[in-house]
Length: 556
Image (cartoon, rainbow, N blue to C red; front, side, top):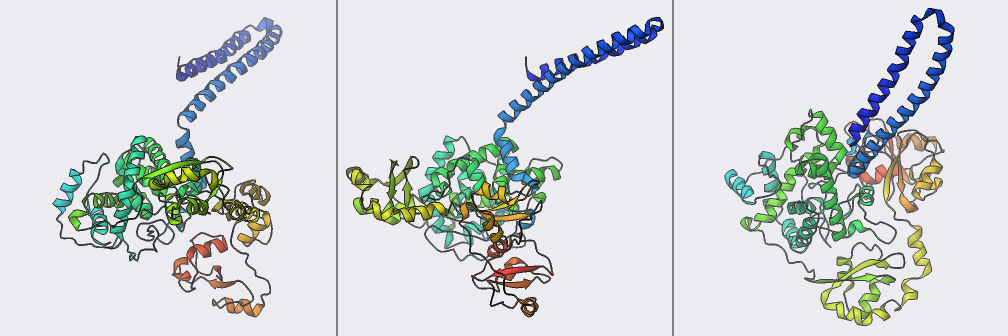
């Protein structure tokens, strides 16, 4: 018997039970000659019925709880995802508020490009909404090529998609050869992983959009790795992060996590294009766009209701996948990337430094870093748990022959207690935004993130322990945050000069008064070395500013 049947039976029993005393009461009231006796009997009867009804209701509530628990268990991941992105109605994939989701701070294809072991590619930023690209390739050719790809994921074609196809295939002559060179190494790995998780292989193209195939990419919003995971999402999908290790930077493990995320997103939305969009802006944000569209579940139907940056994400996916398939037709030659064709893996269960491996096996340190970017200090902390070390296949025998000597080689130097303690005390240094809830106090927040109250006050320029519901606090998990600011020693004359943005030589920041038309991005341009993210961190604010607002510009 299923749960719904149980609920109906229990509910019917409750209704029948409630009808009994009403009929008995009516019959008793019609018997005027024995009213007092009847009243006493009725009182006893009602007390018994009350106890019986209480038991029935408790049983019904138990059935309901059981049914609810089963539903939650069945859909636990989707519940966690929705909670993660909808908490306080301001959580997005990048951990940003709706008003923060701008070109200055997003992980947009058009704003941040990271290339493996290279500086940021000099690609001009442009507004794709207003940009007009011309190509000698007729629309019919694009349409036929997309159809010929026989993609499991629908690949639409329209003017918006066309822009991104041209952008990838014709407007990035120096970036795309390097990206495609990295694809030749990583894409076979991703194809195998995505097949293992039973998700479409075409999703591998998302790594191009997210990070330009750089395993160590770090966005201004704090997302890391080739698949650009935020801290909370990474934890939800089993990626380990501590002072020594950040598995978001491991292309293999993060690809497994990305595949699981996309599979869960597809279970929620039932559409791969919506799942792809949710990877950029969060499941909660896509869900809100669906509601605003009247319940429609097609990407182009909810397109107007998505954040501006996310609107281009699915078209960018189509453009990247197209270029990965037809780069030869556009005269693009993938750059040769020096990555080993074959890699061997070893389980490490003791502390091991890359320098130890390099010294005794001959593996270049840079190759170890390329293959194992998740180890933040070139140390595999095998004492804590079992870890994987990847080395080029041709060095595998040397590793096996010298394994007993590896761990002892200069161990006192590489694992100096002072150095190890410094790494551990620094925490993982992850910058997060905590939104104050009802009942929060600084002490409880500090305990949660393993920091001190003094540090929280310093990072957020708080003069007292008072905080308010809805306030956003910048916190560096583990305590490894920026230096303190100081506002002491300011005179009234200094304050007067600061209204015009002049520098207070006795403080570690400049007071700037926001003018009409200002944005944090435009303000930061006037202060060499300072970014919009630096200003947000220093002031504990979002990117939403208004004229007359006073903000502190840190001296870096």
